[in-house]
Image (cartoon, rainbow, N blue to C red; front, side, top):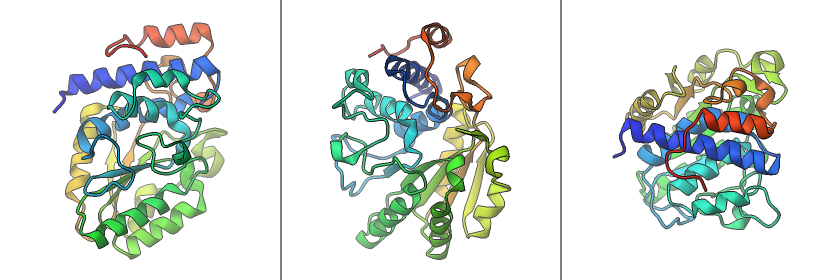
Length: 281
């Protein structure tokens, strides 16, 4: 079991990976990758029960589906540093012919990727099917998802939320990277999400708030509590109150880094704020 400090070191290295990957190709999405970094770190380093080498069918193990597929810099870095594929492969991010496409593709058979996630709003529907299949197979493991808050403006999300509550899919934990920003602005200014807790609860879900959504210890506590709530007749939603661009001072608190890469000077500044801990790729 890694210590809190080890998890913090891991997430700090992932932060370096994120900004370097996006800078190298001058393309990608650093803002949401940075806000979800700590969650993905805790999930893959501590919470998820999975097997390596990776098996697509995921029998008798927990399964994770990334729904907000544009945050691949964080997703790929965490997968690589968790042993799914070589860390050196991160250097091929978004290059022609790479398995590390801008959005995950199952066609390329990258370990850790079970479904394409280019179009927002679809991940919860996929996860529901898998969760119900696990129940039919007598598999007691949990299905996890991650969503962006801007993604919750997609209608398909709410069809899936309604279905999950109605069918009591209680082996599912859906987490929301609630950084309150999206590509065009702050969510309240684009299309307000209103009271997310009340909305999920109205559809028959149990909801947990992690107020410090970029704090390793708080995330770990919240996810452990979420797991205790599974198997009780309701799907579980975890609202992670995060900050866009977390860990890089000039990217924090603004939507403008949703899909913009840093220049050379900005990269140097970001790396200076995050010391190398595990070795760069």
